Image (tube, rainbow, N blue to C red; front, top):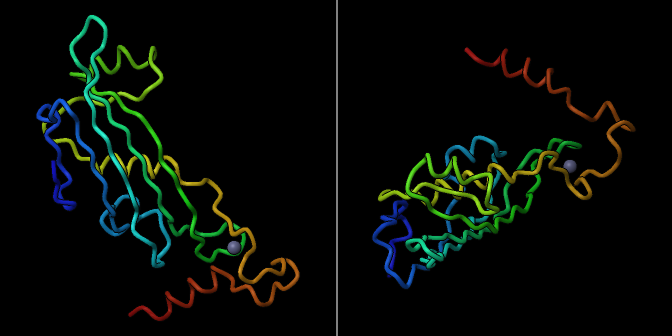
Length: 173
Ligand SMILES: [Zn+2]
C-alpha cells in the first residue's frame, strides 16, 4: 500500500491484514513543536520507518502493533560553548493500539509496550515528533567544542549574552 509521504494521517482500522510498511524523510521544519527546541541551523531530514501489523492474541481479537524507528540529527545548543551541535537521536519503539483511552489506562501498568488509542485519523508524524521530543538529550554538548580552549581561560573573548541582548534592545525601534 503506497502512501504519499506528505500524508500524515492514517486510517488505522482500515490497515489491511498483511499490515503496512512506511518509510519517509521529514524535514525538521515540518515538526513545529520540535523546531521550537532547536537551534537555527541546517539539519538533515529525519529518516523514519513505520511498520503496522495485526497480531492475533490468544482468546482475543487481532491487535494492531506499530514499530516506529527513526534517526535524526538535531541541532541543539551546546551547554559548554553555546554554539549549535548536531545531536543524534534514535527512536526504536513498539506500540500497541487499544480501542479506547479507558483500556489504555487500565492496561498500561501491566504491559511493557506503549499503548495508543485506535483511531481512523492517526497522525504518524505527530507521534514521531512526540518521541523525538522525549528523546532529546538533556545536556547537549560537542565532544570537542569548535573553539576547544576552556572558556575560563579567555573570558574576554566570550561574548556576554546579556551584553548581546542589550545591544539588540538598543537597535530595535
Ligand atoms: Zn560546544
